[in-house]
Length: 427
Ligand code: PMP
Image (cartoon, rainbow, N blue to C red):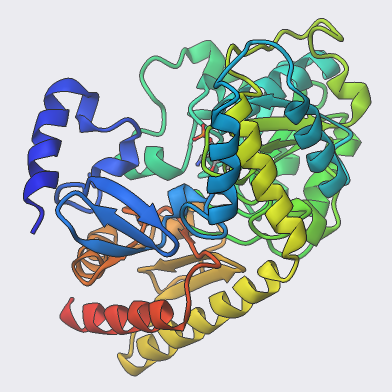
């Protein structure tokens, strides 16, 4: 029964464009009406009609330890009584900066913003100012938020809606964004050769979550870094999704690569709106008021958001085993679903790393956006619907990653696996 969700969505559509405040939520690519959530705790989302779902969205990444973790909840409750926003410095901002810097070796200085989009927009402005160059390279199918420069061959909701070049993005902006193919060094080198002194930076999701999950081939990221150095461009790792999700030092910590700049979001706010960008002090000191590159925010460093974020980062350092445990769970889930696909004679591709996971409805190995687009999205839509009916809330698009959380236990994994088996047999 989705009586209330359906009624709320009808009303929402009259008041909010498409009825939602972020496109993928509208279930447009999977069909049907979105479910309106009332509350969430641990591994579960609860909707306005009284249905409960195992949460595999995790707020699109932030909920590493599950929804409303008591430690974060208590920290935010404690902060509430001190006021919500001052527009003046707080010591928590210093503490969270210190924490991020201590966790991610390439980050020597960090600036807080309110979203991943703000972080990536500011990072490329800074890279352009630092290198005195205009162009950037991004990878086809990577998503870096909705800044104009990134809405060129973008993944995530843009891919889902099939509007890779959004109206409203000017031709001159689009001209400064060059697109290469993920996992294909030659395509990067070709762009550099054609623009040897024009490229300010490469921005890349080191592990991609926004074409569905795509993992870098061995040597690929190192190769990208080498080309950046060779042509005098900065390397920006967009770790909005992967930062603190795959390791306590970002994916860069796992890969042993130090980019020049890193963008963060999602987990660093513990579920409240926060983003950040950071990197070498020499570059970061170009930002106002230390330097000439302007970037500001009325609510940046908001006391509730920094409190939640700090509590989250402390939870991570106090529970270093969380990543190995999630890797084990992720691998076991992959094995279980792969075995079932085999039984059914299906050859679909599963990509998984740690707590990130995508079942692609294609027989092709998925190493880039073209591969991802060979997926049968209509079939994924049916699978999504079948899973939702069985109480499993997947991200409502083929081009997204599932996010596992530490709150999922044996019983939840059993339910996910049996729901998947039943759903695949009904397709
Ligand atoms: N970069 C990446 C890699 C992302 O996954 C996202 C959001 N999914 C963003 C940037 C944009 O972040 P936000 O939605 O907080 O603006």
